[in-house]
Length: 318
Ligand SMILES: Cc1cc2nc3c(=O)[nH]c(=O)nc-3n(C[C@H](O)[C@H](O)[C@H](O)COP(=O)(O)OP(=O)(O)OC[C@H]3O[C@@H](n4cnc5c(N)ncnc54)[C@H](O)[C@@H]3O)c2cc1C
Image 1 (cartoon, helix red, strand yellow):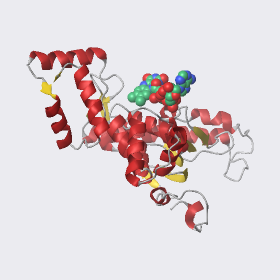
Image 2: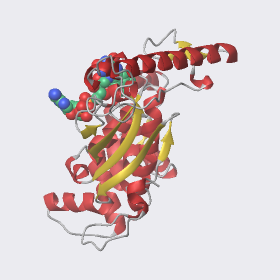
Image 3: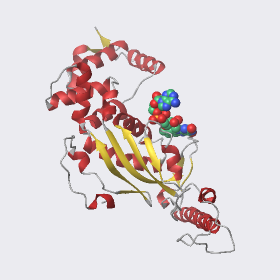
């Protein structure tokens, strides 16, 4: 439990209390070797998202199934603004190399530890032996096979020595004994904002990161993907677990219509149509309807949408 949450008493509030999010408040989840992430604050729940949509549609029905149906309808149809009505705020400790990727997600707010103001800690990300891989042969932006145990230990040692060496240079330039006084009174104390530049990008930084649910889903879709770098994926996976508890209906819709959905380009659709038609594989509307019910597509509107798509591809016989 994070220190700021340890003596905190639950307060009376008129705001929406989200039990799935409350459970995660202040719960520090370790990530990588020195990193962590925890939920600092949140706003809203699934119902708040549906409620925001009801404002725009002007209807006020409220049963749980109607809320879930509405959320799924919104997500399926990319009606995204109601998902911006809920927010999550995280405290994250992460290597600067991961932060460089993370910060590309502009639709969030962040406030980072200042290495101009404070002295950075001697903490560097050293990949575990099972995360040391060779350059991928077919993906210029990725890792290939793992290396043997001895080679992995060698690589780890190179990282460790590089961290120790550069941190020693950092301390030499800072010339600070930890109380603000110089270690060597004959030498100047170089400005922190300058001295930090000798440090490598695997040193850890920290920030508060606040994002709404719509943009968090966008982040998760990109950063949980196997194409994203292993290190940032680990943070994304923890956030996904928290969101799943806090916004179960929205998360399920996100999985069904974004994370595990596949969009086909026009040439891809044409290829699929050709393959199916060349093989004589066409179906009746009844067959499609039955099959979709078997796999759990119980929503009538969704089945109609599927029928429309398959008809467009020319594989449903009238
Ligand atoms: C696997 C992977 C590899 C990547 N490789 C590289 C790389 O090699 N080099 C590199 O530089 N980046 C790289 N990126 C970062 C990527 O290009 C995006 O910057 C990052 O994923 C953030 O996505 P985003 O812009 O959609 O998100 P956000 O910044 O959160 O924006 C969300 C959405 O808001 C809109 N938006 C935000 N800002 C603007 C704007 N200024 N103008 C118009 N619309 C806007 C867009 O619709 C955008 O999709 C990579 C990302 C991934 C996941």
